[in-house]
Every structure is written in C-alpha cells, then in structure tokens.
Image 1 (spheres, rainbow, N blue to C red):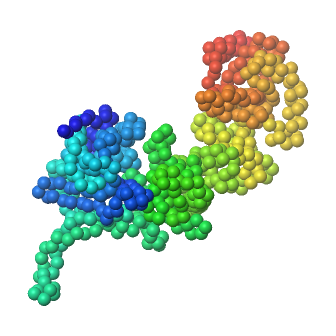
Image 2: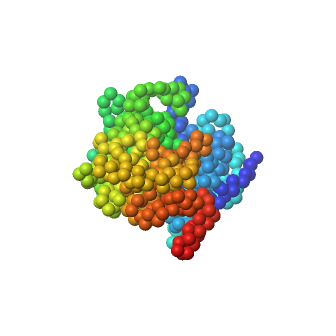
Length: 638
C-alpha cells in the first residue's frame, strides 16, 4: 500500500524556490540526473569488484528515453539503486545534512538577485522540477529484494509504494511542464537538444549514455547495396558521450573550455573555476589529477558540515567521494579528483590502508598547486589578487597551523595593503623598497584599513616615508608570529614598545627625557595602576599626545583574539602607555605633576583615548565623560 509522507518544512520552501526557477539555466537538470546515475553505477561497480563474485557484473549503461505522446523524458541507470530508507533520506529531504543553513544561503542569494550562484548548492535531483510538474522514481537496491516507486508533484508531499523491479538500478520519469510564454519544454523531447546537452555537460561521464534515435539511412537494393538518393528512417541506438575520462586524455587534447565544463558538471557550480590544474605525474608514485579552485567561496566552506578532500579513483574505479588525506587543511577549498594505479585499500571502501604513497600524492598535489599559484601571481597579478581576497587567510592558516614550517613554501604568496601603496604588495616588494638603514619589516593591525590609518603610532612612519603593512584579519598577525622573519629581516608591529628599533642617538635622547620626567611618569603609572605595566616617553608620536604599545610579544589584538576563544586561558598583554614629550598636553601635565588628583584624571582620559584609537571600547564610559568634563571646565576657568 502506498505511503504518503510530508516534505520537511525547509524542503517545502526550497522546492518552491526551485520550481519558481532559482536556476537561471534550466537545462542543467539533465546534467544533474546523469551525474546521479553515474555515481550510482560507480557504487555498484565497486561492490562488484570487492564482493568476490557475490554481486554480478553488468554492462553499465545510462539510458535516455523520450515519449512525445505522453510528453515524458526518462533517465535510467543500472547502478546500485535505493531502498526505502535511502529514498526517504535522499529524495524526501533536500540537503539533509544541514538543510536550514542551506536554505538560508539560497534565500540570501535570491535576495541579492545572484541566481547563478545557486548552482554551487548542488540540489541534484530536485533541479528536475524546473522542467517537470510531476516525477516518478522507480528503484531497487542491490541489497534489497523489494523495488519501490517514489512519486511527487513537488508541492507538500510525496508517496512511496512497492513495485516489481527485476534488477538493481533507478529510472526517473519526468512529466514535462506545459509550454507557457517563452518557456518551451517540448525541446527536451527532441533528440538534437538532448544530444547537444549531453555533449555539453556529460561527455566525459565514464559510462555510455545511450538513446534510441531515428536516422536516415540509404535504402538497399535486392543485393544489399545502397540505392543512391534513396533514404528511409531507421531507429538505431546511439551512444551520446565519448566516455574517455578527461583526466586520462593527453594534456594537449584538453582545452580550458573542457576543464571548465567538467568542473561545472561534476562539482555543482554554474561559474567557471578561478583556476584549473591538469596533472599527469609519473615516477615512484604515478597518478592523474584534476584540481580546481572555485571562483567564489563554497557556500558551506566555514560550516561544521563541510568536508574537505578530493574524489579518489584507483585504476579508474571510484573509491571515495572525499579523500581528506589528499589535501592539507589550509587547501580545503580546492575541488578535484585523483586517479592512481599505485594505491591499495582495505576491503572497506571508506578505509584506505596506511600507505606512505598516499602522503606522497598529497605532498605532490600541494607543491603543484602552490607552484601554479606562484605562476598566476607572476603572470596575472589582478587575477591572483582576486584569489587572495577569497582564500588568502587560508594560506596564512597554513603557516600558522604548521608552526611556521610552511613559511618558505607560502611566504611569497602573501600580499597586503600598505601605507605607501594603493595596490597590495608582497613581502619581496616590501623588502626591495626598504630604506637603507631600516632594520625591520613593519606592520600594523586593525579592524579596517581606515582604522589602521588613524593609529597614532603610524605618524612617524608616514613622516619618514617608511612603509607599513596593514593587517585586517586576526590570522595575519598570528601567522607572522610563527614566521618571525622574511629572508632574515625580522617583523615588527609598530605598536611594540622596543628600544631596539631606535638609533643610538634616539636611545640616548629617550633616556634623558625619561630621567627628566621620571616623577611625572611615575605618578601617571601610579594613577593607572594595573591598567598598564609601564608609562614611557615615546619617540614614535608626532601629532598625537599618547598611544598604547605592548611588550613581551603579545599585542592587544592577539590578547583580544585569544580571549574570545571559549576554553582558552586568559591572555594578558603587557601594556605601555607612551606619551609624546613634544605635545602641549604633556607640557601642561608637567605643571600638575604633584597634583595627584588632577594627574589621575588626565591619566584616565589619556589611557581611554589611546584605547579608543587602537580600536577598543572604553571600559568605564561614565568615568571618561566625567573626567573629560572636569578637565575642560578647569581649563576654561583659567
């Protein structure tokens, strides 16, 4: 007896978006259904090869059938099939591993009128509802004696019933929508259109995609010879695709258009990849690989459900959808596949044996990808900057997570906005343009470029014409803390209190100033208490009266970031309040050096001002306003 079930709430909403054409390109439904059929055959073929004869061999095929009278289009495969539970999981629930997040992303893209980006969400089977007003799915699992039929009109519910099916596989019957307006659904019943779509999207599917077509052939005479200019219609079975895996072709036979089409057909994206890499590696370990960097951040890249990894084939047999062992974590955004004859596997397809050759493949892929990015940086800098805007923080993570071990591999790929340059520069460019006696590569941190430019410490570098790299992401400074230096030139945060950055003349001048103003500096320190670890005269300030710097290696930005992580031990930066000895405010304070109450008010206001300029909130806003008003009133009375 047929069982009727309701779609999940998220699935209902997504179905309506789908039916109302969130895809701007409806024809991709055929690509999606053929890809599903190919995946199903892959899984069956693996079972056959590892079953020791228990699973019978088949002539693997995908079929397309047309019935113009009934206006149905049918796509069939003789793959692994589905049982009842798998039907409910795979067809009754859209994006079942995180459907709420999935739906929110799609709605966000729709609101921005960015409909083409929907292609990256990979809704697969449900794309068929763009061209069909009802669908039937007949299927039988290789592991189940019963067959089932799934029926839905894409509204609120679906039915599942038992049916007689002889062997495993899946048949999807689409009842095409009626033509309306500019939408011509009849074209999907025409042989030419279907052949064209298969060639465009699915030519490299590894199993034959077959269809019965009517072709004109020569009539034969009684001796079986062709009669000139005499033809008759004859139904023939035609294989529509080439079936040669793209990665098995000679590289000179594979165009960029081929790579782009393969990527879009196999990795659920409408857009061409930003970068493609076709590898044919021979040696101690040999493999073929196709690697792609998406031109936009995958919608779920930062979600808990995201799985990194490359598709793994052994001797052309699909083994694993996401072989995470083939990619380092910092390159998790890379899509692609690897096919090798040199790997072994356990009887479980999900458990690869511990094999050093797997690590060798991973290392080779990593090095080839990085080399490709370096070539891109040299040949098309603007395109590289687009890559870096999307994935630059992952390169930084690669340095940080390896404790600096990968700095030599990745350092030349890092680029930054800077004080003296409108366009991002790399570390080599910074080094080549350093001042003659410059000891450090300087950087500054902040929430944005504008906030960094407001830092009081930056005034000196601007006046001296010394460039400063701008860090607007937390990972930047953490990665630099692991690198320490670039080509033997150490890094220096401009907010660091460090006399090693001064000339002998500047050090001597600073010592004299601090000795002359020791009483005032001590009173300010006493007033601020534990808020700061030290109060010092500054040599880096020009127009501003004060700034906050740190010592002992932990910056305010690193302190904040560490303390925001749940479970981490509380970090505390060693703060130094630096005061500009040439500023009128410092001279005015000198007159009150013995008036501890007034010094206390000045000290609190200056500390809060310095923290504000560093991009931090004032802890006690009421006290800041009170002190500021009292000091203003005192000044006006004079």
